[in-house]
Length: 280
Image (cartoon, rainbow, N blue to C red; front, side):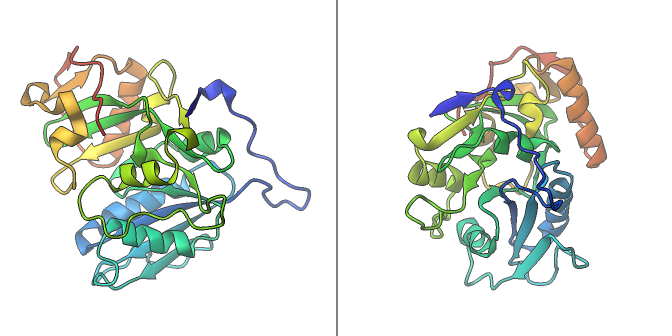
């Protein structure tokens, strides 16, 4: 495992003489399993379209029975409708997206998270051949309890992963299609890359966007428990509070993102609390 900071990033925005991008293509993959999450998936598509990385596509795999994510055709967006019986898990849906992707690199976009517009750019900027890239700090928001905190994991936060489509042996890097319990991201990273195959982008709060590069929301439809998602911040004593280790400029950005998403933070106080959750 190697760790890099924002200042160590190489240039990635080159354009060739004929006007086409000379950087690797990244596929943002978005999967959806039921009709109630279609609007969330559309928000994820919007977040993808705002990404500043110059060479990208989006692949949507939709197992919802009645609704589509895309309402019209886009040149860099493709949606595949699939049978939920044939693709019953997140891993199975993501594998279909990976198989259909034209890109060399894959970045899953969770339908209920927010990505800063430079997230793809910054993670691709520190990529290394054959390795995945993860952030080690992420803002997490409890919508029900109006709690904001920074989740930290020195080994990398697996739901921020960017990875090469193919392994060195030419096989696709695929998820465990049979896994039904939460934790498919952890299992995928550990099995396909491990510590030696991981680059950590240091997204601490000493710089912006830092942990705001990715914002994870907790709500009533998460697969993970509140305790798993927030660690030491899961307790009811943090309701209506924002962790004091989130700098003021970060707070303003987070609350603006929530306002634009129609979410009411209702933050009334700050709390020292623990430094950050240590579990994923």
